Length: 412
Image (cartoon, rainbow, N blue to C red; front, top):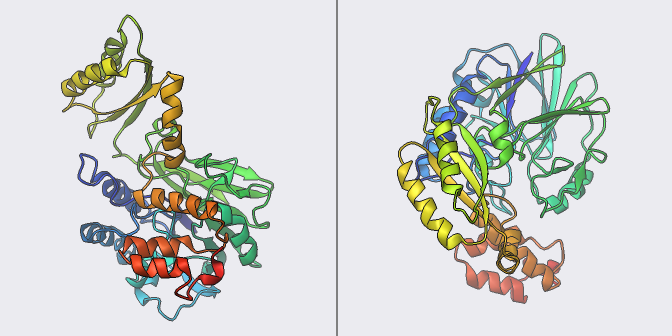
């Protein structure tokens, strides 16, 4: 049995930019490289936005229809694990079954999320605190999954679910969380760590973290899938290639297949100095990068340390204009002035990561305010935030002030 595993496709990211097709190109290649497998596992953040636009949906459905059009490999679904199969389309079992989680970018409060909607098309199975058992040629694999939940509740939700390995199966647990020491954002500490994960599973697959890592804790293999696209422009993403992982059973062996057509990303650092040599340093590095040929214009992120960014900004604009059609440049400035640095520290804390969706930033701010107001930790901020995003201000006020009974047991 061969199982292809990847995650964090982020369909629709970088819309209205030179990079807007990258998420679709990379994901399509990942899917196509998986078409000789028996199963495909995608560990969350298929979409970049909680409410994907129609044009994003159209491209996603075209890509995810490909596994359903493959010949039957002989793999059979033999048993659901706490999963209601009544509304599952027969299409989901045609060709290569695709098992998915929803991630932090798709997570909603009370309403159905985009991955649940995707399941209704018959192109994927959506797992959240449930699972499925498949068999081929006498090899059984049980795949259980917990989709992304707020980090502070992850351990609590996991304990309540309490997944158990299935006898006589190769057991896989899929997650989309920060797991200490594999931390996504240090400003949102994980409640899960390698010592409190469920025991007895042969493999734990985790999305969410965009760099790929293969590790082992005790007898359990841990696979951090990484993403198929660069979104955070961090140093690690310039080092680790994007690709898919294949699991072979019963050998319990892995291989990594890199994507061939991804846009190259480079991370560089320089210092603004009194002699003003940093522009020349930047140009030399850019020219060195351009010595090679690329299928797509590369992305280069420069981190610049300095104090006088009024001068730096003028120089950076010149450089950006010079290389506009050759390189996609991203500059980030690290201010050495303690006074200015302190003023932007609050913004850094609020961001808690690169390219955080505006919805998630708003929800984070709302959670901080509710905490200061002594609201119960069980209060469903996701639901209330959803009401606000839909413009239902009056209903939200009624809930918060107690004029509506819904959720009042969770207030204060």
